[in-house]
Length: 381
Image (tube, rainbow, N blue to C red):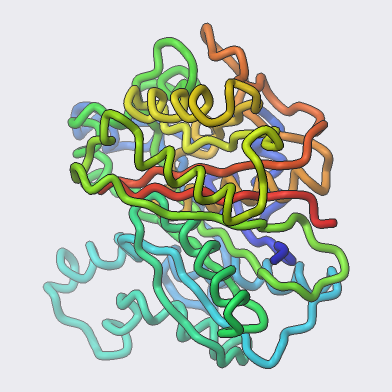
């Protein structure tokens, strides 16, 4: 399976070029917004998606972002020689959906709306709108796997293609839920940091990291076996669950190790062939400990490491979508994008954009509730 087209709406702006150029800049997409500080009336750093998109889609920034990412991915794939097969499926990686509109529904509208205005809140509605717009009639499904959702959606798409359920799949991963009321609990729990610029607060694999900065994004991929100029190949993947705790990572990391080993076996790739670890890299101590253990136990400290959340923010359900888009574009551009190092760091951590000299990338994603996933990428050839 290959990635035939990419679309992205992120804190850097509308379009995959804005994402790529933002990552190359080495500067965070976050900006200061009121209401996100430790005190509710203080400002805080968040990589929110700016206003934009097609006004004809409607008033929801979330709805416009989902549609724009999907449209860009489809147009990109078609420009690269993709022609939709008879059966095109749609998968949406999602957790909270249109959190801003749900807030307005309860607070501003008192829980009452006309039917058509209420229906747009449902997680099935974006998929329905996409199938209507593009005339797709294959299987459709929402994928909910916490912050691992985008990885899991791509793995599910590969399962559909391998088993003949679809000829092609449009995968959309979206999360525009950085409301102050939803960010604050993560700050209070010590997992997120908003009072300092992300490169200072979120330092995966570096000393002094305090957690992740929040981000928003909608990303989309057309995945297919029939395209003239694909970005990269999705070789395989795997999913496991710690079965341990709603927030904490199981201390032995055994189930994360199992996930990575199964992903490698599923892809037909040995551990010594992996050149890059595109890490979940949330910047929390338990995540750093887990992925450092993966590097040591499975890869014998060989792969170079990139962690992009200091730049794009932690985009929740769309996080892995942003990070896989960066890897896929990187294959075409011959670059591995990475955040600049700002403190003493793991020896394998890349310091800013680096020429790509290897071939195989493994993308790990660790979601709340013990949701582990890994996707293996390689050159399109």
